Length: 377
Image (tube, rainbow, N blue to C red; front, side, top):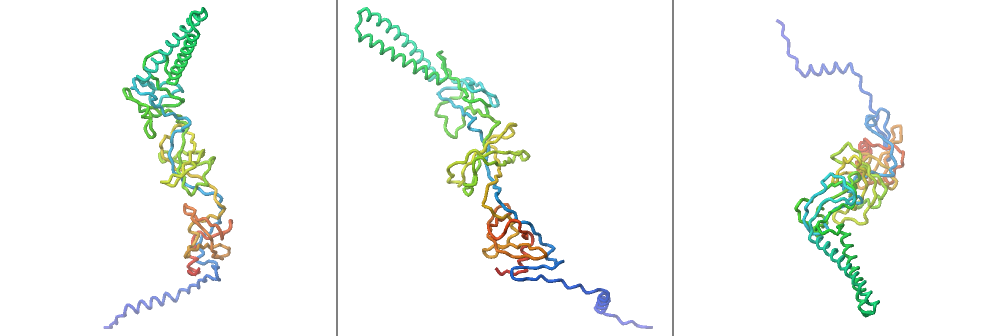
């Protein structure tokens, strides 16, 4: 019987690898990048060149800034109506949503103050009539030589006083908008045409003139909802860039699909010391009344900046305190160049010196080129 000696597994593995290698050709050598000072030259087919992305440097003459704000009523078309007299509301004549005309009554207030003014006006009319008749009588007696001249002068003075008092009481009643009838009723009227957008008035509510304080709700607010203002918070750094006449694109979170265009009408002359912002006011057309007062909005505004080249943040390499960019010179040649740059926001850098508009710069893979050059500045 013939015996077979066992062959070690390692010997079989070596034989198998030797057999495979006999049929494979050695891979051609990969060309190495050539470094000459600040320049890198990548040969054709270089794996490093396959991952690089270059783009043209763009000239930036304006930048887009984001602002926050809220919609408010147009104050030139808005009236906050409060009671100018003390009293009690006895009748409501307008409800929220009602369209009203200038001079239309919104509510009636029973007011002893108005009753006193009406009574004073009636008394002044009576006194004037009496003084007129008395002067006529005294004048006849004086012409007949019965009464002295001093009595005529006194009657004339009394008539002048009565006329002045009648004029005063009538002017006061005209200011209140009440007539000669003594009814103690004051009609609270709107000075502007529009829509009743807010109402806190209620039947039986006691009202006083001193209740009309800043920050306190008015009895009625009448405005034009088809025209709104937006108050924008402008950072102190943009004081010189935001000016009246500029157009701002707004967006409300509640209405993401509705474009809103507004024009800046006014920029305040002072900065809020707490927030270090100033207020800008823009006008918004709201013909469809989809926008609501007190709605928060965000805005984008294009502001002029000094001419510079704008590149993606990934196009620059920061070494110490210096920025560098790699300029694509074509045919696999890349030149590292020091630049002066600052952040421009939204993932971009503003290059102030070192790059010219139109030059192609590496925007993807700049760190790879820097590794090839080494970390030397």
